[in-house]
Image (tube, rainbow, N blue to C red; front, side, top):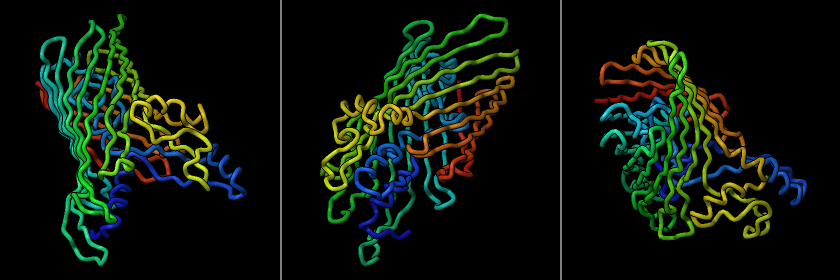
Length: 397
């Protein structure tokens, strides 16, 4: 794939943007500046973009079959991504999992996401976890402005996590996760006359989890969870700080209800609500880009940006609600051997329009498990996982 050197960042950034969002062009009336600005306020699509969207991708097939949720699901080896606080309640001493997801397979080969994770119980009250998430954009041939090849490179991104979780009581646990992030999209090439380099960042997650058994004729359990993730420095591919981007800081809250019908049959219902803790782009004066007409300045510090993300939408509280993504999932287990899963993910059309149905199966035999998931888009925009079967392998001891 030949790519002109001056366009390499634009092309790669566009591919990365498809990981978490669709591009939408607002319909704006040209009947005057005032009317146009008002139209942008009420009807415009203001997608919140971040650096390293890799960090927001559901990395495993179990969550991928449940509508991309996991903050309050039963603990497993994938909990390090969704809510590490769950690991303190894991019923196995050790578990590990691996998932590979082909990406944009209908367009190009060689792009994919790999995820390796695991945990170890230190004792009955605490556990440590670790994970590696790696995203490869395959081999890309870089060319100069005359079309001459200057080499074949393999842009990639990865994140390494380590977590610690501890029970605060018989029903409550908390966790902290540290993360190192490296994004190397330009392979050190000069782009449009500017020197570039790999971008690096460090971040942290904070999680909390609560579960309670309900005494009744049949065993029931409720669980609640919350996690703030990717709290870290801005990321940049050059020494020019004006080009830095927010990490996808994120707040996820959710719950689960599990009902054990008998010794062979169990069903769970789960719901997650998710919101980026990143400022919403304001509406600027078309004649003076430094003047903000609606909303607030989004070129702010990380801490201010987190708090501002709750009240800075140009169209007010209505738009803030539009920035909340909703995931719903159902999981049925037969005899702890066969699982059938389904879910749905909804994102407002003005904030990316990702809407899709998810389906999946799980099989478990002794210490070995395999999970499958499949995604069916229900909105008009294409999804990078459309018509892709994702597979996870897991082991527990």
